[in-house]
Image (cartoon, rainbow, N blue to C red):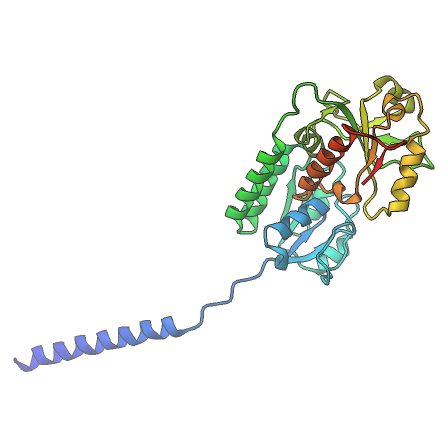
Length: 297
């Protein structure tokens, strides 16, 4: 081999060795740590769903009304209607989650960071929003599975001849004229149907789901179920039953077909499935011997 060829070969070898060393050093260099999302959720149902998706560690703040696992503590930041904007800004969120309530402060929240407004009323809206949450939090497969589970469980129609049930969202014995009912076109309405009952208010309602006592008497449902406020004690639930039983013109009162469920049934997140079980069990009880006045779960 002549001198020029020998020098060329040595140069090529040195270049290859240098490139290999450079590549090995790049491979050995630790990769930059992934930036953890800083998520603020201002709606209890959305927070419940974030936790169900296994994305709880991404939360840095929640609404005043969100329930967290025992031992967990996060800053409380108002709600989607009354957000504490300065406190939210101080947390430097990378994602703010809110429901699609008409009065939600989505415009103000968007000025603080990426804001996702999720429709959360009907079954179709909720399942679509759960899938979207899964995508946002990199839990798409879990989100799809959870959405499908809710869809399958809450899409069952009531059987023919099912009782006409009025499902009330709480009842205040001190303010008996305020009757807030569950709309047919809502997640709770789907749960009522899946449990085997017809909604006594048999049409979709766009405005406030409220009845007067006179409207209730004209409606005269076969059965009445009441969801008390979360945390209501047994004594409080018995008081609700006693107060409602004073509405003696109602067929449901005359036949002791009034029931007070547990407060846990207020969930409009994945926990809505508990309501299906509670209503189903109460319907079974009402089909048999009934105590005077009605039932308390």
